[in-house]
Length: 334
Ligand code: GTP
Ligand code: MG
Image (cartoon, rainbow, N blue to C red; front, top):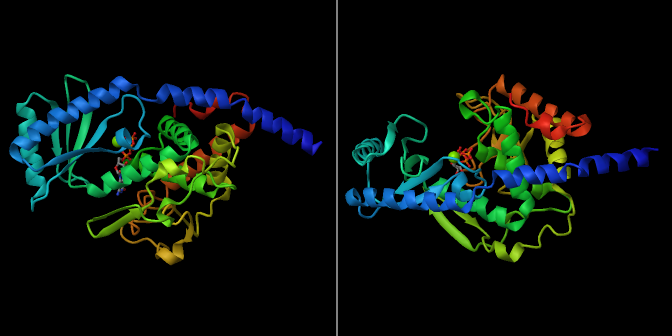
């Protein structure tokens, strides 16, 4: 009887593959959006280079890491190879953009990552521009490289991000997690499947190396050679979504564990000295940044928001287990 029940569960779960894939497809940005983004980048580059001829512009974040939804804002990093005062440059940039008829121009010089925000009236795209945040450009490449290895990463991360946005648990200023943190959770989860669906690129031979702000960033980036890596694992997107929420609802050891994409394993909080609150960093859910290893992406989570998060993971796991119409319930707006 148990076997029969298990097989019923299997087929129940498999019914969700088609709707999950449909959601995934519907969120992928169309080609013409990419074109518009490039167009905007080129015109911003022209403006910036009038004042700083050596400056280079990079798109980072979701528009470049392949985990971006249709109609998302773009994140741009200006690399200026000079000794500059970021706040001053940002204010100057704001003036330049304002004079060029860009809309809603606003310099946020006191933010953790200081930026200028603007909206381009021609393409309708909003954009956040930061200066010399080169680590973000490098971690963007790492995420994009992981996405090339197995399509199930992009599918899983889209479903998880869509769930997080629908359930309002993708708001760092409210103590929940960034999209970047959710993608790292997905990569780590797929590294842990048996057989593994993703390798640990930073544990392999170095084919890509840069040093940024004294951080050595090295990993294997010839991902076209790894296209078959996950082939031995036949799990479908529906099974993976189910297992992902189950892991974060019932299996993760929040008291002792740190998830680490860098090592492709779980580390102890003890080994990172992340066992107590220091300043505002509480380490209630620990996600190690792959390059800035002293950086816990869960640091924004406080004792209230950890409950919200864990209840949402449990809610999602329960829905995947029992709800007759999981796709509607899972993404029900909070
Ligand atoms: P959406 O805008 O929600 O679609 O997602 P996103 O991928 O753009 O993510 P998010 O806005 O959270 O962050 C944008 C980029 O900033 C990420 O892709 C990272 O490259 C970088 N980033 C975000 N948070 C951190 C952080 O805490 N540390 C570092 N080093 N980089 C970060
Ligand atoms: Mg973004």
